View (cartoon, rainbow, N blue to C red):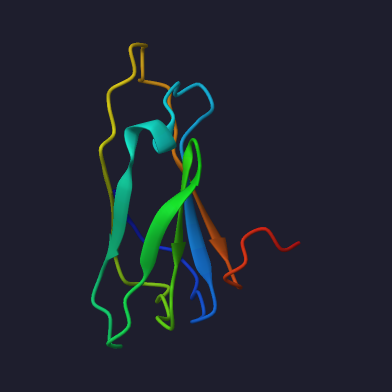
Length: 103
């Protein structure tokens, strides 16, 4: 999935990619892997992990995301749902801190 954030995300930030609840798969069961790709100036690289049965979380690990650069999130191991998926929408959520559970 290609995307542009539209705003800078600081080095302490994070992203989540959330699949709709109607996408009846469990990322833990499927052992999903993922990665964030882009032109990173730092030697550090963002890390991606399963955050919930329908969500992957990306910690930036010292990488600042630009407001204008295009990035790619690749999710491996996804299976096609056995339902009409034409109305399924993915949600990308950005955080200004790496603890996505912090309010």
